[in-house]
Image (cartoon, rainbow, N blue to C red; front, side, top):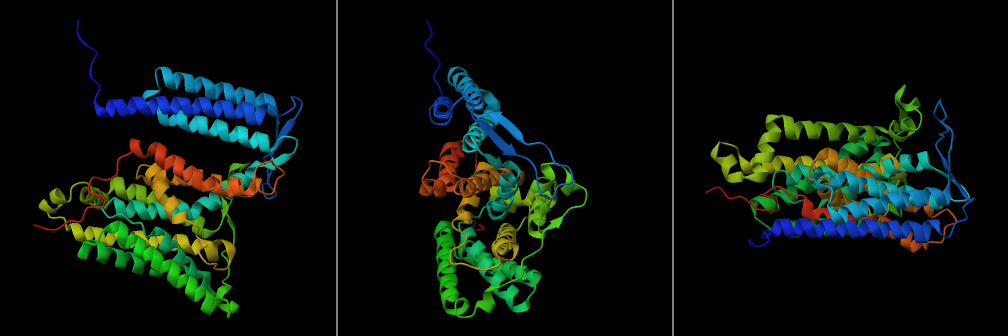
Length: 421
């Protein structure tokens, strides 16, 4: 009798991930029942507000029986966990994971709104706004890592861009000049990273952290010495909200996507342009060739290091633009370390999205939603300590990277310096 077939290491890892995901799904179903549904009376209702004060057509509010809704969601999640444990979902695992996550989030929102109301449209609109610097950071990472250079310095580029946009915008009383300054400082820091990593072959992780430390230290020092005594240097004009005609009047979707400032719209355009450029143009083909097999690219006449220099600087410009959103696009002033790790969350979104601009954009929305949830629920009367709510975006980051990093593959030459032989 022939023995059982021997599984390869990849197959064993896939089986292990299948079991872990199944257990996680079942655990989420238990959480929904024990912590969300059971403490509530069956007569309790949750009101999710879909109306927006600016939309021409106002949809009705979504009124749900709180406990019954969560029992149904828990049942669906438990069924997904059972199937995942027994036979798995194959190539559809990502769709099922997204559905389970959506069910758990919807259950949480229903629990938060139990006996009261929550403006769901406002939460989603805030999620888009809060995801903007994260997605800019993810796009910056994609431009760099698709060419083979790891960019850990995104956090420093975002922070420096925010500082320069605030100061230059204040001095000139023009937010667009502030944005131009932010893009320039992002390009300069990226050029420094490129020189260290490509020309002098410095370890790319170390070079990135050095730039982050430089940016944090320099902006903090200048903030205390320059901005605090001179508040006029930290009062830039904020870009106005520009509702897109017709699109902004679409119920629910209009206020969420089409009532933002020009930096947000530029992000939508950048995601599409970078995706098209990477996968449908000669430039993108060369970038991906350099990031996957630089020796082969060099053999056919592609200047590997030039491509890397150019992409790293482009990535820095994108990160600088993302940094400008913090000041001239949002708060209207610079605060020390105001990026709060968004650059690193952007790297997690890049990994979650599989080094794909569209995937990274969707992943950024997940992190933005987690950030929006913690800020909205903090002002509601729910029995969760505020410290735990503040942890939500970073916990989601850890879960995503720890759970999904084994399912995606970075460019083969990512982080590996190239020396022409």
